[in-house]
Length: 170
Image 1 (cartoon, rainbow, N blue to C red):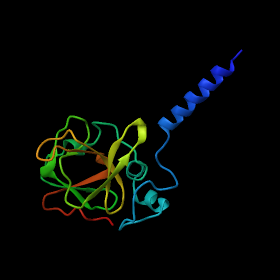
Image 2: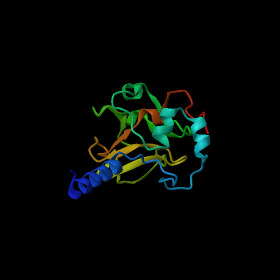
Image 3: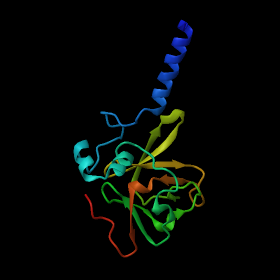
Image 4: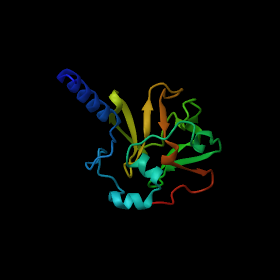
């Protein structure tokens, strides 16, 4: 027979697991705003691929070492996949060994940050300043000159080689 203590412990454990694995996507948008580009969630779903929607709008994370942009070495610009705002110059990209495209600095005024307290830790989330799309997180273990590592989801980015325009969406 199950005791009350076992049932309460199991219920509390399940509650903690549910909090841990819950989706960060809610009906109340956690991003600060207002943003220059706004769409309804239905419009975002039509505009983005399912993977892009999961990352940019649902605050998801792609699996490490799966993005071709992690291995991109050409000169050019990395832009937001949601609105095409140029975010990072290739000159600031470095191989962090983490499996995600990493940069030591964004283009000026391209990104915003906010505190992220998900997964029982405190991190700094990075989002596109124009559309609010979730890009990844920034950490203080990067190289000189900034000492920062902008660890970005490749699915949240597009790449335009030098001489090509990245600003095609909007």
